[in-house]
Amino acid sequence: MPLVNMQSFLKVLEEKNLIAPAFNTTNLEMTLSIIQGAEELGYPVIVQIAPTNVKLSGYDYIANIVKSAAEKANVPITLHLDHGMTFEDIKQAVDAGFNSVMIDASKLPYEENIKFTKEVVEYCHERGVSVEAELGELGGKEDDHESDESAQTDPKLAREFVERTGIDL
Image (cartoon, rainbow, N blue to C red; front, side):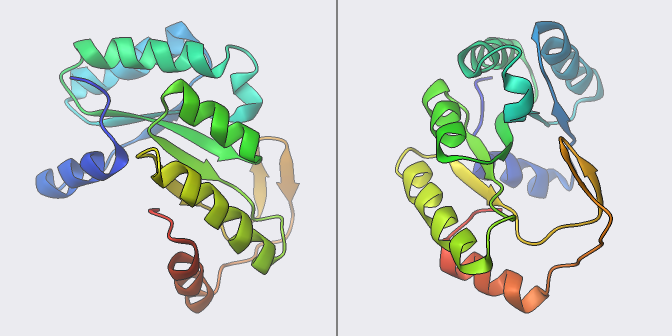
């Protein structure tokens, strides 16, 4: 089946009362293994890559691998950019055929995060691409960022953030 957009993907999960894993990839072998494992288990899967790892292969290369493998797959698959930090990250992923992106502007002050995220949402929604965004930060290490502090996002602030930005996730 062809790649499915995130809304369709989430609808399948809800209808079947499933959860879906999201695995980061960097190359052909890893991508095919992720999809093969999902097929063997009969679970939908999110294949994702972060800009820090896309340098190893390129947006077009990963998108083409996932699209080709998804065509032969018997489970829903969606392709997601994980932790895009710049508008250029987002644009390259969307232009390559990713159907979901995550913009991580959480390091920006709250109002700047909202403004930047809204710009990403507008660009992506015009192209049928879902947007996930990040607000706040949890302690630990992710990619090249490490934080000793544990900060949890205020639920009221999260609600306002969603309403003001129009994000999907």
